[in-house]
Amino acid sequence: MRLRLVPKETSFDFFARWKMWLGISAVLMVVAFASFLIQGLNFGIDFRGGTTIRTESAQPVDVAAYRAALDPLELGDVSITEVFDPNFRADQNVSMIRIQAQEGEEAVSVAVVREVQDALRALEPGMTFPSVESVGPKVSGELIQTAIIAVVLAIAAVLVYIWLRFEWQFAVGAVAALIHDVILTIGVFSELQIRFDLAIIAALLTIVGYSLNDTVVVFDRVRENLRKYKKKDLKDVLSLSINETLSRTVMTSVTTLLALISLFVLGGDVIRGFVFAMIWGVIVGTYSSVFVASAILLYLGVKRDWSKPDANVGNQFGNIDA
Image (cartoon, rainbow, N blue to C red; front, side, top):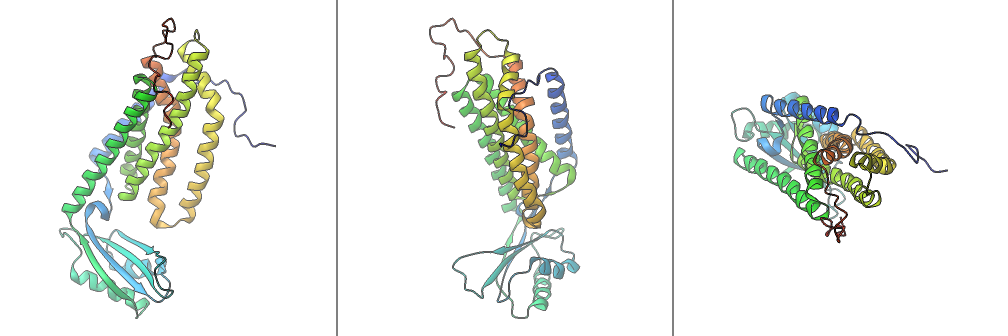
């Protein structure tokens, strides 16, 4: 017996209120953008600057104990991660502790570093600190610029790819959906003031890929049905195509969410921000593939002049692998 989250055949009318869905998406994007302008983002150490302390001990790294020892120091944003390396000795346990720069300072002061070392040595007297490195605001500013460029180039590459694979109307719909997903993800991080670091940039790029994959699956079926139902209204073709791919879309999203929710609950504080971004991205990415990308395609229309000798005009790159 095969598990089905939705019936094998559905006939939902996804475009009965397509203007309303576009309006809701536009309002959410405005709210997210306004929150970004008013509150800004809660930048982590990667973007704000700070100090990284490397520890080494014979005892296993206990992140919870390390955090409990440092909490009384009130250092603000502190990130503690265990470092794994197959070349480490059996008694070589390494961690990286990142502390945000204090107010008005470019990096953590020497006195604060000593306090951190003393607090950790109280847990384990034999602990050593092989390196202490600081990241100033200049480097952090360069990281922000690099992160923005990475996201913009990813979206631009998607625009070109979809344009070649389908037609320009498909490309506009797909890129609009990606921009929608990125803005809403940044917006929720701004509204909730969740720490925003390089891991979240990685999540944004992953969300772009996930949403694109979902959109391409729908658009592939749309293109097939446009050739199959030459006289059918575009709205009906789009709705039919989404219904035909609905089971795959829901199954993919639900199974992905199950894994992400498990990581969110059990993965610990280190990856919680990244996983939250992925959970949110899967939800809005699934939504945008149906109610944003396809709705914009309906609004723009698709050229369907099948009287021409070459019925594949505009689809000459359709066989390019995804």
